[in-house]
Length: 177
Image 1 (spheres, rainbow, N blue to C red):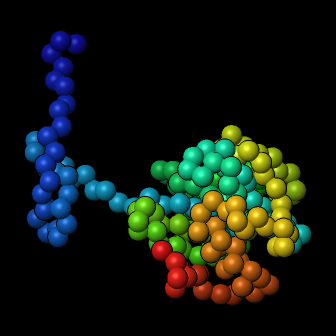
Image 2: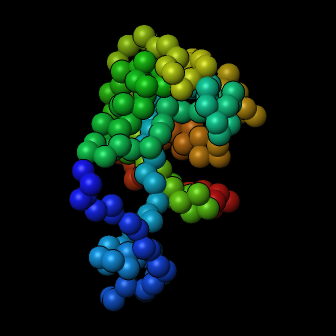
């Protein structure tokens, strides 16, 4: 339609009233564009003492091994997100036990929530974001080929509480990010 007005953005850097951080603020309407950390959800999934790892088919770190994990989607719970990621990456169905860890990765603006989970069955296969999906016993884990430091943290934290029913969620290791 000829009389439709096109919405133009006129963002300026400003500190909104009541805030103490510089934000992008629309000069037309005052909308504040908050840039917040991304939430990653995932799980250490186990079946018969073997842990599910996926070989990444996408960047970053294509070809390296990771836990099934990824960005939360709008409208889902953290548990739903972890289940969805396990299915997308490894066609895996899982039963979530509890929160294993919450990691802060400020250099890339991420908060990672990792669960301890059990695979519902051994039916796994690589999804579109994975080149491979496999179960590894502890001594078979390809440690030098893990995609991200947080994958190693989660695996070690999982091992530390293996067999325990109650434990508080882990945080970044002291030597971590």
